Image 1 (cartoon, rainbow, N blue to C red):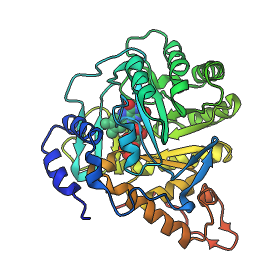
Image 2 (image 1 turned 90 degrees about the horizontal axis):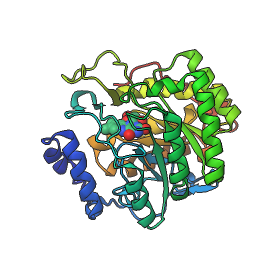
Image 3 (image 1 turned 90 degrees about the vertical axis):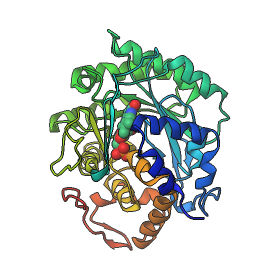
Image 4 (image 1 turned 180 degrees about the vertical axis):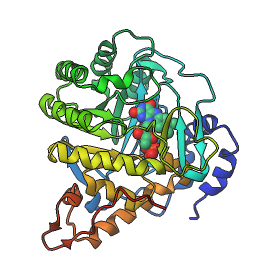
Length: 374
Ligand SMILES: Cc1cc2nc3c(=O)[nH]c(=O)nc-3n(C[C@H](O)[C@H](O)[C@H](O)COP(=O)(O)O)c2cc1C
């Protein structure tokens, strides 16, 4: 069946980006996703893409990143597009409207986006109610934030962990969004240390088997990276999500929206987020599962993240440009790349760019994350 997304995109791209996102979610929830079914849809994923992590069988490593379905309106429809897992949120304890509009910009020429949404959220009550009604098929994560006017960030995250843990397969602590004043200061050593010890405790009391992950920003200094790695290992959290959007503006952006305030996502984020991913893999000595996110739009991108150290990969912005068929394309291409390089399993490929050679596979081409892609 031909890919119908280019037709739909022509319509959606005439709308303000936030309206287009809302319409897409409603359409998916009401079953429109079926018209994007590809020949592979509904078929089990190839065994080569399957992976056991945190006690779950991930059918494939490609997930939907946080921010697309913030309020758990269509998690099952998103899974039906072929994602191996879907991350809901960011959810704040109380509902809040987020920043004034316009707050979401599409940078078409750069295959990128800038957002300063500021955690618009229906709040925990509404999201938990939706999650508890959902038939539990597929792996779901909940990404947690704090209310903008909350005096005590730790309390907000603790509440999120305590209340959301029973309704999700994993939890992400998001202290890396650039649009909530002061949020990213929680990544600083002393505050992070105390935050994570408290949240691990809260998780252990609420649902000890639920993995707790931390999502970090790409704009961290070398010292901050080292501190985060050390604290993550010491507190024994279950993984890192690398990375959120960047406040940086890599040279060469062409869109007239490039100067908008907010976090940049999409293609220009690929290099900085993959460089951070590789750093975090090395700093944690490969002991901590990493989810690689930022600028993934092709199978080669996903493969580069995996080789740099990601056990799982997420994407969001490329989905807006490419449509749902992207998920199948990436999965098919990823199988080809794994076979080409002689990997017998996905987990064998994780972090392989840090090793000079794989037995029987010969030396791998070096990962060149410093070089800009076309
Ligand atoms: C419109 C938009 C909203 C986002 N909202 C969130 C969010 O609420 N919480 C979060 O952790 N990340 C959020 N993100 C960041 C994404 O999860 C992801 O880390 C980032 O966009 C990089 O991936 P991409 O280049 O594939 O989009 C958002 C991204 C976009 C574009």
